[in-house]
Image (cartoon, rainbow, N blue to C red; front, top):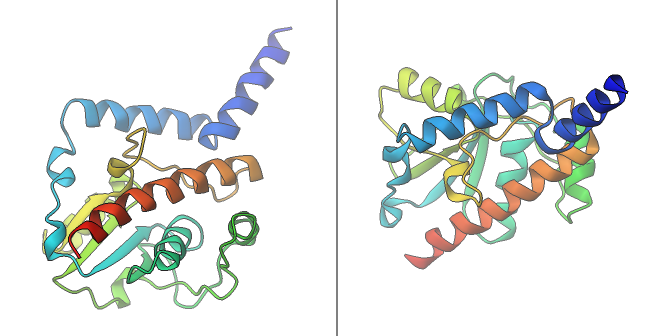
Length: 192
């Protein structure tokens, strides 16, 4: 009986948060948001932005999908990873999840953030607070950054990586990213 309940809980967590760890991280960073830790990153001067730069760890799932959604909306955008190699393809599961939503990731190739020419008019939209910390440290607060999930509903400072997760979580994650990119696009387009 207890094993059955545990399995049901684990299945629910895997479908909605990718894993138990994803659930814990999601709520840990939501608490940080509620106490104001990311308030500064919700203040964006959209009139000073010309291009959106989506950032995640490997640039094979989340940021690749966010870039493709933004481009489908006619927004100048690129994506990159903080821990990736150059020119790798998107993850196969990401390609399939995106295809089900009418987005083609089959020609995506990874870009390390270190090889990217970041412009003063770029806005870096990261998936997790650890990505924000990396960029802040490595680039000395030189670039405009925000957490993509600060613009979604519900606000979610941490968008758990779907890599290695179920197709159900990929779909859940990509739904959230798509809706959030649409919200960013409204703010971005309003000043154009």
